[in-house]
Image 1 (spheres, one colour):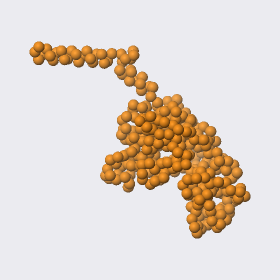
Image 2: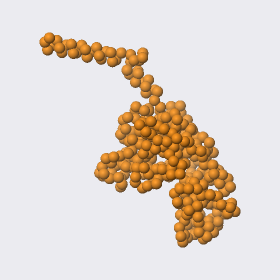
Image 3: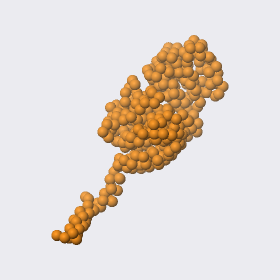
Image 4: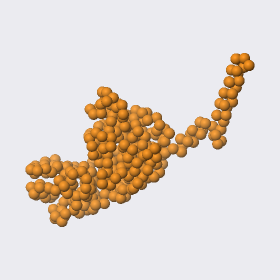
Length: 365
């Protein structure tokens, strides 16, 4: 057989194989089959707020000192495999470092989340966020989202420019969790470093390491292993659909400040908070919410004008309700750290100024 005949035979074989490939698959052409596959994927909305996951630095070895430079499109495009697990749409809410997060942004974000989750076209939401305040935003949403559809917050400990950036895989895992039917009804979650954490319990425990987010006493809700989402438990405290807090018609939150307890603390911190308009004060106390005699007296005085919550700066454990709390109109924070106590107190003050009722909120949420 000469060369022309060999080429002709090869082309004929290739043509037949191509024809077989484009033949209907289960009654569908490849394009229609692909459309059917896409239709069966969950619809996940990504809301971007900035943070390390959207940041770049001067070199690929710099993991501090970076700046927020990327928007939602760049974040999503960095993970092309997302299209295999979900139908993705995105929106830029803000683009800031997480220390610049504000109650006003929280309110806007909560309204956006509730708006999208009310649609049949959205199965879950992923929020990209800086890690410094991610636990606070997550807990705020845990108390204000009015849906049992999954809401997952995700971030990164290394900027997008780093040679071992963790953001892309964290985002992939977060979308996997948000699109998983088993994630429904579990409240707002935080996903980093292959772990799934409940917003109520998770905290940042190290300034720079990848495994910084932990729920030390309660443990992780679950994990992602081998692209498989596994859940181990559900959080018991009230959240989302069982929460009484509704921010749909609220333009601002009551001012709540945090006073950090230390040996020799002056009473002027309480005076300054009240003078600035605080309706509530969280005391980051020592041990089990401990306060000096001087601080206690000042807090009792401040309690005539604002609600006082005793929390702890220890980092873990429960601040128990004491017999003297009721007579001093103090509230015990339970296991909420000072910054999460502040969030619950802000929302509680939209409902009542009664310390007894607010104590019930801290016991239940």
